[in-house]
Length: 241
Image (cartoon, rainbow, N blue to C red):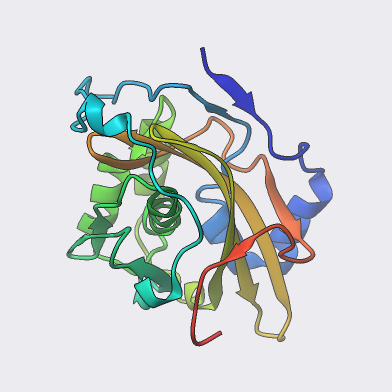
């Protein structure tokens, strides 16, 4: 049986209103995947297509190496309108027409996968429609994934130029094993008036079919919170910051 993971109490209505009124651009990103009260299964659920994982049981028995991302291993690139981290060791290993995939089965790989999928599986991403659709189809999992993906498609794929104001800041890993991970992703948004608002959202990743996939919850805005600081978070290494 899975166990419920609740990293912090349900957010009151006021912070979510602040997200709408103060950080309009960040709502477009966080609202796409504000992962709420989620289940962290002891074992990964079967993929929607019923296909078994490509990773052999003997590989799963070896604990992945954890630790923070290495600054010498991380480079930053503009992707989908947002500057995001890439790791030569942990992924993504493939980029086909803007659709990135191929992450290592490590804590760092799960964090990078969640960050990339969170941002690229969005109709507002500055990416080819085919790349967004590939991410929606192949990198989301859970019973609510089809409904979420259809909602994105119905709203259309008009890029949001304000995505360039989103800053990928930091992460905090709450749970990890070789079948799943739960972490918080912190993003900041710089407004035209010079103000900055930082939010975090809980992201759950599942290892399925040889790569990380993002679990879509029923309520995509629960447990999105406004942060006063990044205490308890690990900053993404960035030589330019």
